[in-house]
View 1: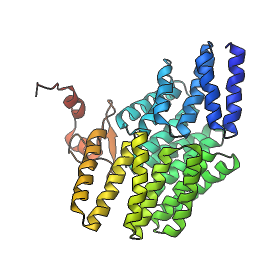
View 2: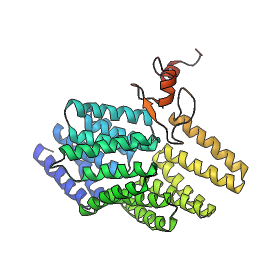
View 3: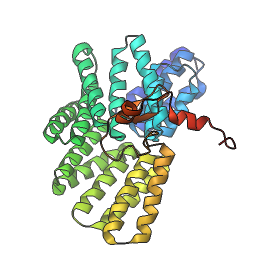
View 4: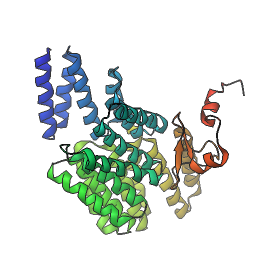
Length: 363
């Protein structure tokens, strides 16, 4: 396949993708990747594949796409970071985001910097440093205001969405609603189904925070409908966990367990360890309420196994990270610790890296 034909097929795929025929677009792009001899065309189609897989929550497929390309520029580093984040590999995710941010700064790429800031907001929201979870999308919104003339409105919509998530987690529900409404308005104008689904999920979570489960339920249902349609399995996990929390508020514990069981099946299939950790935490609460000690112990053990596997603990104080809002600080190796522990104890290098460098038999 020559250069002209490669370009035509990429444009064909983009047309299908923009008309929400994502699977057909993926098929077209995969054929280009297999048959084209044009290096520039192959690199461009990799970017299309990575973006499409990201919106559908197919993080393992994203990593396959990024490893095909040896030209690890800022875009690929960002995509790899999002993939690792979807798989709950936090240290590698942060390392990739920092590489992408350095690339953006070195090349004065404000658009890439904006996207990285949104991803960093998502990263810190997941590990519960809500101050940074708000700081980075606010920075993205500043970039849109200062440099975004001529940019797609999607950049503004994404920054507003991530601000809404952070505001909700901080308990600033009115601010969260305002940002989410702004994001949803843009998503509806542009027919952006993936973003519409995320906004519906955020609306539902806001109502859940208000204990208004009757308003939350239909929004979770609408979010699940779109996420199922577009194949966003990570989003489906988040919806099911939100639904489970609604049932728990209503004391319908068996219904909550049904939602959690569905979420567990998706999380195991996707390899999303953070989703597994969250559902074990919910099960722990449910079985403690039900007085079922054997099941309670089983989920406590599994919860701590997830924490160990994801290295979600502070290497200084030993307490887990991600259970409650805490200010965190990353070292140059991308291991992160409680900020208060670093300020109190200081460090001569990373204690986590020192432990990893000790070989079995030398302890």
